[in-house]
Length: 462
Image (cartoon, rainbow, N blue to C red; front, side, top):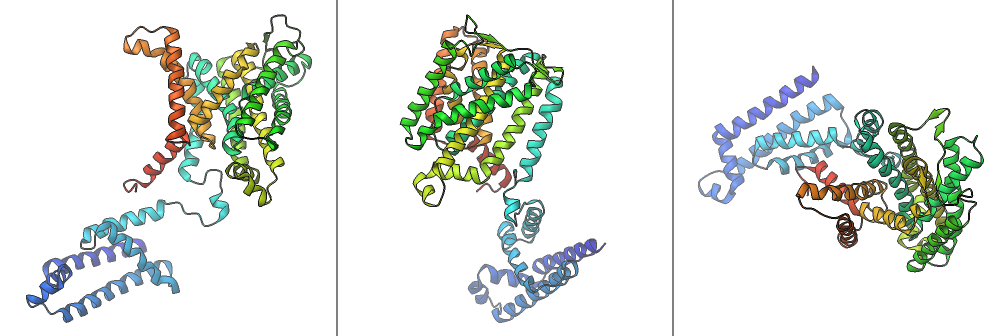
């Protein structure tokens, strides 16, 4: 009831002021002085009396507003600062318009009530500090778990969503190394192969081992290998490190193709994953495989998000931005670079195990050759360096683009050979990489952030 009375008093006061300015001679004289006081004085309007009236009316209005405010929120010594809020109100609504002032007050009031202000470091460092982001992420996860399995076709699950999720997980791992720590790697495909063959040998040689444990141990095996090949990063960087990791890729390709122990003495070099069973639940349908992969991706994407926000993530970014300055302020290069290689290799190795067991089912070393390394690097560049979201956007782009190009001849009614479509795909990838490196180095993630910010600030995007 008090709110209603306060609103009625304020509305009545605004109405009285509007009538005063529009219908009385004094009000019209006041408006004339506001427009041009010299011209008003030349036609006989007494400026002294008008100034007295202006200050008197302003004082009365301020008195009534202060009484209403104090009755609602209490009297404080800092109450005079409330008057500063009138400035943005009249700027938005106009200095000479009462209706505009009303609209400006509504905009400021709604902004205060719906805006999100951080008053502590803890609130500012939340996983998703903006309410809209939290709601959006929860909604996406809920739809992915509850709705997609019910409505998605078998083709959509098997050919699009499962590879997208696994490649997104691998891209997150590579982004930790390249985007957050600034260490170039061209051996990601080889580390995926380590995870795949480690999982295969664990599942075959220790058949009673739980499949979830197999996947985690496969990631740890890739971690060990990644750390070993990451040690040269302590001495070299840039192009030389890229060549070193590329050498690791070729060495791992050779090892898995030539050393028969990894393939369990397979004469052809190809291996098949054993049946997927977790706690007696046979994972054999597209929906089951999709849910399994989705669970892994959600858990480790959130883990990566927390890592890059913590102390270890800040040390990675310091090494990326200026390694000499980072060392001066006490960050240990050995610790930062080795942990980046370790975390990255774990994610990539886990993705390799999922790619082999869940998506491929049967594979050979060529499934993880250098082309896979470049594909993941393209995802990170197009999606956005130093962005978890960018890893998902880049993976979605890389997975969807070839499918769209394959459908392009039918859409255009123009016959195209498979070889021509493949050439177009390479041309597009190359052009897009150059475009993002030159125009927007932070990739699709930055474009998404800019669009989201403009939407939040609309209709005042500037």
